[in-house]
Image 1 (cartoon, rainbow, N blue to C red):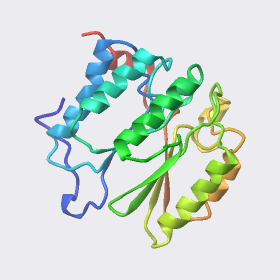
Image 2 (cartoon, rainbow, N blue to C red):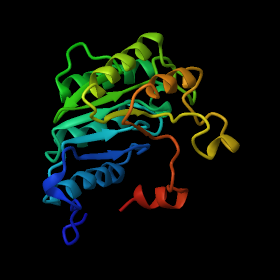
Image 3 (cartoon, rainbow, N blue to C red):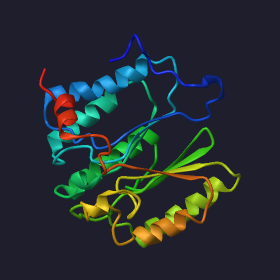
Length: 231
């Protein structure tokens, strides 16, 4: 936890929207992992800066069990550093306990963002900027199932959010196909059957920034062992 070297923005006075973004915590059912996650928010608390949002781009838990989710969301529920929290499911959250975790996720969306009758996909504005969250609507091993209704929702929200020339941020756990090196070694490392359709909708608009997880870029087993090390 950084007290001597807190997080400082390069140009704090001119920051219009600040977000802390993580993905692929794969939180195991261990107290040490829960403690290490809580240190993330201690870092944010130790910063003199204000964070407008916290984004979690999926693969919250390792196996998606109830105990793992309880550990993860206990940290989020108790932290005071960020008010606006965005969460989505990854393949590890959806593959084994889809119905259970869909219920958990939608309840947390309703709690954190005060969205009534929330779905796993949603949109929310902060400081006049739109953040859109996409999520699989079916249990699939690695990829995502993005329904026609969700794609239409994406199109509508992008049109609304970009109409004044402002950037819009779209988050989904799975990345687009052919946008990274993993297709050569990991054939399931993309959004799935709706990949091209979702991408075509996003490319209709300017200033759309896509945020994904799934790739574990820069995170190797040795680092994961250190992060979740028993202490």
